[in-house]
Image (cartoon, rainbow, N blue to C red):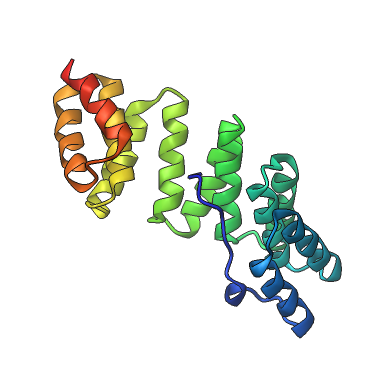
Length: 198
């Protein structure tokens, strides 16, 4: 995933009681990660069968870099709600980052079964193909993403890097020049442009 912290809107949950809603609001406003984790654990203790609270705990753990515990909590959430799109995407991303590529792909395929055009799930799947040394498969995904999101610089960079891996320097340069027009200060684009020019 990107370096941005994962979030979860309290409004999007089925937590139910006023006490739980108050805990979730406190979690959103928590000043320290440790306090957020304490509140998330407390919420799950109060309602252990609530998938939204499990997801909230998993996201809190994920943000704290506690990958093993986060993975378990995403799993618990999915045991309670196997169609939880956010849990599937986050789990897939976490597993891919941890080198569990097949497991991560399975989670992302589950997310894409629920929402075939989900850009975040597609991006993570493209990233996984890149890690697996399959730039051609990754390129198919990033071509699709850029087609649907022509101004998205992150997707364009990934598309260009796939072309570079395959050896399509001219096509990569064309994409990078377009991306540079949208974000002229991007260091990755500048470096990649130097590579394709050499």
